[in-house]
Length: 102
Image 1 (cartoon, rainbow, N blue to C red):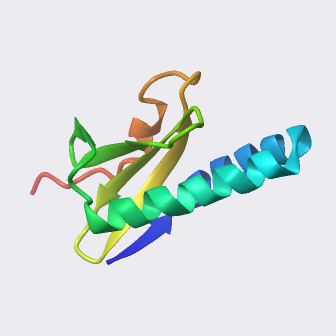
Image 2 (tube, rainbow, N blue to C red):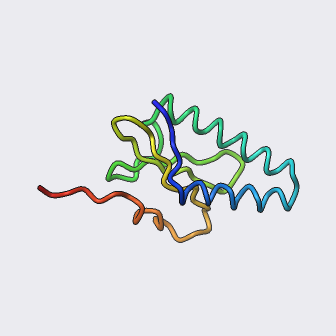
C-alpha cells in the first residue's frame, strides 16, 4: 500500500523542514529521516498507532513535536496533517472527507 500526503499536509511538512533548516541543516535532515522512518512503519502496521476514531490514526514522530495524522483507504494511506503538538488539538479533523449518508 502506498502512503500519500494531502497537499495541506505536504505544506505543513515543508514549513517544518524550512524552520529546522533555518535553525540548523542537520535538524531538518534528521526530521526528514524520522518522517521517512515513521511512514515505513505506518505502511507496515497502519492500524497499530493511536486511533482517534472516525478512521483517523496518529503516529508520534520520534524526537520531534509532531504527530503524523492519517487515514487508511482501500488503495492508499493518506496523511492529513503533520500536526505540531503546540497547535490546537484536532484542528486537522476538518480535513477528513465527509461521508454521504445515503
